[in-house]
Length: 464
Image (cartoon, rainbow, N blue to C red; front, side):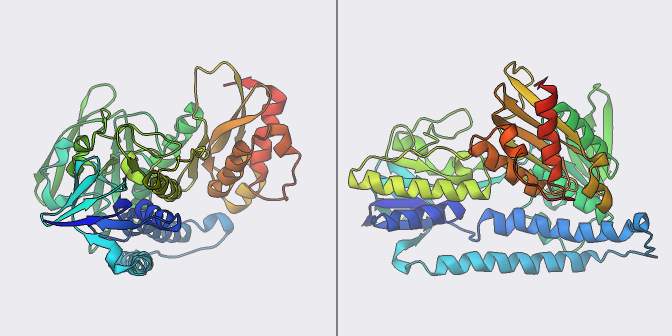
């Protein structure tokens, strides 16, 4: 078996792995990048970019069908499914190509192709022919879709986001298991493109929201466009004719049946760790198979191994993966040279869902048992700019401590992708509600909704 020695071995060439490799080399380490493929990063290839392309097409169709509010009459709207998916794939491939071009710029001698597994705390075997000895290693192997057991016998009638966007045409009907960010985004988009959509979720939350008032609003808004069932438990799934039959129970325990042409598993993603033999490196694994690690350094407990991105199952979104990769790369270089690692404070939590209305969760999660915070609320139904645009659905809930220092919040409404950033920055900077209220907000803008919620907080002192 051939052998290679390096300072830092990075396993995985996605967002986190590429960031880690570059940070390690910039810190002076001799690093190698071990890649199994496929390349292009989860976001560009099967995640946020193709899903947003589907949403963009659906938004165009929905807008064309709903012009009467403005006195504009559109006679007919036709959705060309193959054309929708062809544009999606063409643009998706363009985004993936940009990522791959960045990988092509890496030195060829630093790239190793193959599957890696740990032999011990200082050695990786790559395939059957290469052994890589390292001073520090970084696990950045990404994640894969979770397929619940009842769905595993459906063959090509079952989709995940790894396969959904390869369909040649839109299905007549689609059952989706999961009402989280991915599930509800695709569900609404497909429904607006003319697909009959059913969504089943065992929980009571939707679109990543947990605040009860917003969750109820979201269920009503999305349920008006598709067949939505929260508190539903899947019992079995089997092929039937050209489609699929799903047997499930509702929240009252009553048996129900859904038939659809295709099924999408949108029950989350699991880290790609099983093939690495992490215990051989001396790592201690949690119940989810993820090694114990320090969130401020990305260093795992028990060996000179770091973990970053979706592989660590903590905040699996692109901006976090990129930052974790940079932290892991710099700290791996430090470990390799005998220098102390640097702890970096985690960013303020920011998660978004690109439905219409959009949803977001910022900072500290909603805690119904908290007794030391106040909450501010607003409703978009009468918000000026939202009514002008005909997008006046949803609301905002923001929480702060008793001194008014902002802690976090949840949002459901128009332009939430922008409002959420403003609140994230305010929380990160330790601002109070009064600090933000005293800053200029132009009229008429949706951003005024943020001021309304904060003013409500300052005026009412409602407890969380």
